[in-house]
Length: 210
Ligand SMILES: [Fe+2]
Image 1 (cartoon, rainbow, N blue to C red):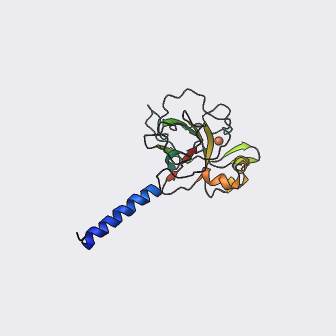
Image 2 (cartoon, protein in one colour):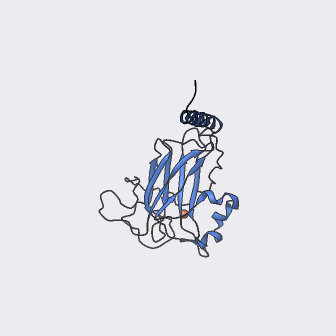
Image 3 (spheres, rainbow, N blue to C red):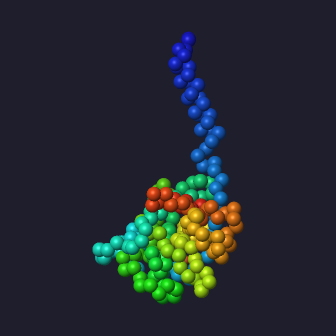
């Protein structure tokens, strides 16, 4: 039986696709774990009822948080590139004045009553998460130490090593003078540094299985 050129091409492309799939399984990645960072002294301990994925609004208050809006999104993955569903993410940060919702917070500016300060969310089935927030301001950790803008994260999931870290913004001059940022080896800093593009950042988090 003779094959027409068309069906032969079709057969070849199908065979190639099968071989390619066999050679390159979807999970054959080897991702570097996201670098850890210290928790810092301002993990929220106040009772906070609203801990949803919109930090620019507090339930029961009609106002909007001040500051530059920012969407933080990404996926939680393991080092093989598998997505991690139902990972619990705590995310907390300073407001537009560099103030935390914490009694020991260093800035004397008043709290932003419209800012949520803390989100507690879970990743979806595809490992994704997204949080609406604002870009935090820098703040004075000590008299001669200005901390660059950053957002704190803690990620927990059974079977994975819990990760506490901080996410930094690229091209912030204070990054290069920040004791905590510089504690992370230079070759690992890209794992905790994001670019703002059109008001969004993508922060993928890679956890280690235990
Ligand atoms: Fe901080």
